[in-house]
Image (cartoon, rainbow over all chains, first blue to last red; front, side, top):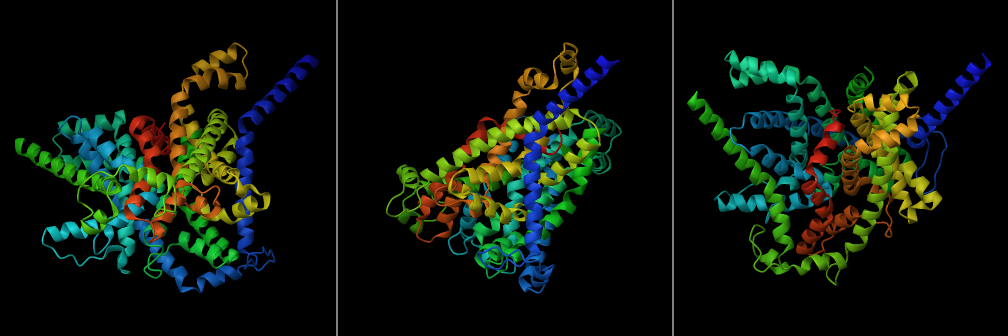
Length: 302
Length: 281
């Protein structure tokens, strides 16, 4: 009786040690991460307005300040453009390309295209942004030079035009993430069940476009959801492209929340207002990542 | 049937041509202009082929000169140190945490998993002010440890989930057999699971390496002149009008060289890492 109890205790102690060995580093860093997050929430409700920290509680004062700034609403509009145009065209193009690669009648096409469109994933936005700003220059840039050699005197000024600048920035994002999206879509095509269904539909004489709509798309829903989540998060977090290519300009035409955060917290030294922008970005990201997290939970624990 | 196949062929060829142009053009512009002289860039179009390749541009970009005041050597060394340390630690700790998450059941593990899931894609803007304060107050800002610590905090959830996704795909029989032989979980992990998971570690390491090497926001905010990373130095060449265009492109090439070479030679691991992030182990 006693020995069984002792054995039980021993086993429990062993499992505590195991638990600590496996999770201690992760838990420590998680605690630090959530600690800094909460700290940041507190800063956003304090009154830190100079180089010296000031933790006097001011409630939602700095949120009110942000909402009264025109710049904040420019950011919201631009972030919305990023969320929609960074995600929808990338996903649609990726589905089209992935399907085309499945159908491609030439051998070797797939590995060529994969390498070709995936390499930007290994590059930083700092460098791609730098190169693309060479493409975009109105006077001597590559795009307008090419158009001129075709006899077209291009009226486009790309990122120098406040009305369209954000769209040209988003194009860089789509270019950079297309390969990533294709890889994810392709892997959702390649389940045994789906391949069988495609085969059955082909035998029945369904057209290729019909198969895409009625057989493939409904059956890659979870893959699409994951891809859309990842793209949404990455286009919400966008900072580098804007900072490098236009530095939020012309004026503040291409400003987004992430760049405004840096300007507010570090250039204007309004740390509390900057922290408030950080909290707002986090809340949006939190909402966007919910479907992904639920899906991951199900996948892991069932 | 025949005509249908032809339409498909035309579509495929058109798409191939468009993609090839769209994806080779930026690389072409970077490489060719990094090999030109400055007057050549100013007088001829950016698309022109270099008259006489100026290989020495790379050494000028690396070591600096009177015209190029942002030598990339120190920043590239800084990036290498920071990225390697973060990658090794994140892969090691992520393997431990990911194994636990993938092998244990219960409410507590679910709770940790949710915390990890939210932290996975956390926007850095939400933690940057406290991170700045911590690194400044503790004096870590003056060494590489400030950035190393910050990157670890942010990348450990990701590496745990990626490693865990791979571990979920490993058949349990080996571990069960070892358990029957009386090995404890820690022994099983290091002696049985780790040796067969080395490709998974390679994938995760490549993903973390690329992500940290290319990270700009935290590096811009936290790095000091002593710890400046390659991306931050690169951004300075872009921002300043004094930096000659040819050297700016040479510096770009130096900045992307390491992750690009990894991608070209270890692309398969890279793709597996991306798919693990999409929860496909």
